Each structure stands twice: as C-alpha cells, then as structure tokens.
Amino acid sequence: MPNVTDVLPSERKPRQKGVARRQQIIDVARQTLIGTGITGLVLRDIAEQIGITHGNLQYYFATKDDLLVAVFDQELGRYTDSMHEASAHSSTKQGRISAIIDSAVEVIAGESTSLWTMLFSLARQNSQLCNILETAYKKYDESLAAELAIIDPSISLVRRLHIAQMIRMMLDGFGVQTAYDDPNKPNMIALRGEMKAAIQSWLEMDR
Image 1: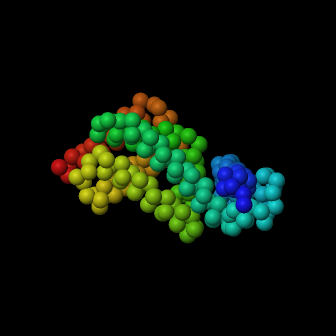
Image 2: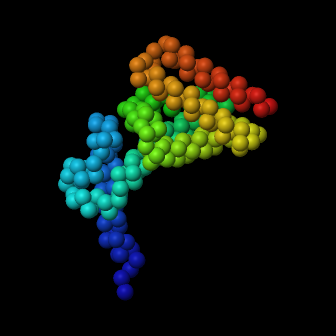
Image 3: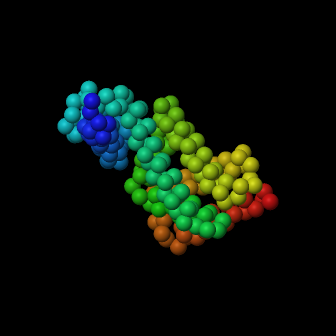
C-alpha cells in the first residue's frame, strides 16, 4: 500500500496546473477588459489567446458572467488586501483611518480603475453586471466595516456598515475624478485629508 506522502505530490500536480490555468484565464480576461471593454470579452477568443479549446475554458468558466465575477472578485481582493495590510501596520485610530484612504487611493491610481468605471457605466443597462457590482460593493462594505470595528469596537454593526458605505461612495467619487485629475496633485491630496477628517468626525459622533 503506497505511503500517503508518495501519493500527494502526484495528485498535487494536476491540481496546481488547474489553479494556474484558471488564473491565466482571469489574467487574459482582465487585460482584454482593460484594452477593449466588455464587448471585447469573448470566451472563444480568450481560449484562442491562451492556446486551449473553447470547451476546455468552459470547464473553468461556463459563461462570460462567471468569468467577469472571477475578474472582479480578484480586483476587489486587491482593494481589501491592501487596506487590511496597511491598516495592520498602524497603531492609532487616526493611522488606521489614514491607511484605509491612502491604500484605496493607491489602488485607484492604478489601471484597475478603468475596470470599475466600465462596470459602473454599464451596470444600469445590464442586470448581470448590476448584480456583480452589487455583490462586490457588499463584500467591500463588510470588509471595511470589519476594519472600523477594530478602530472603534463600541460602534454598532449597523452604524459601521453605514459609515463603510459612505467611505466607499467618497472613494468612488474620488476614482471618477482621477479620470481627469492627477491623484497626486495638491488639490487631490487635500481632498484625501478632508475624507480622513470626515471619517474621524463620523466616528466621533457615536461617542
């Protein structure tokens, strides 16, 4: 009877290959969305770029919507991971608030902003995209509310979620403005300071 340690490596290889292939599909889809928009995202074309069959791609993502969900789940992960990491290095409430805003702005300044802007603009016309956006917002709000619980555990969950939604809406507006304004210009840096002050005042209202 084979030892368990002898079996696991051989079983792990196909599993690791599948994970890598799934990520490759997501990466190509992401770049396609940035380059040509949602209309340019065609599963058969993605498969051809990667060098696999259309049927093979559908083993990982049966529909275009499934692939879109995966792309935006990872984009959302970039926001939340950077927020949690930056906040964890801060030892004060003010530092954590600053980390929340600065980490978000750093992501907003990257190319992923074009993906979210595209999703915003098309969500009203497409119920599937609207659902993707709604789900992403819910996850982000809950993640942000968890950070607010660390900053001030005395605030109720309902209040934390409301503040999280207000922060997210401010960041959405900031992201829209970066389409025509440099996020590192003095006026934009000043706006970041105003956002931090607003969050601080919201938290203080509950004391």
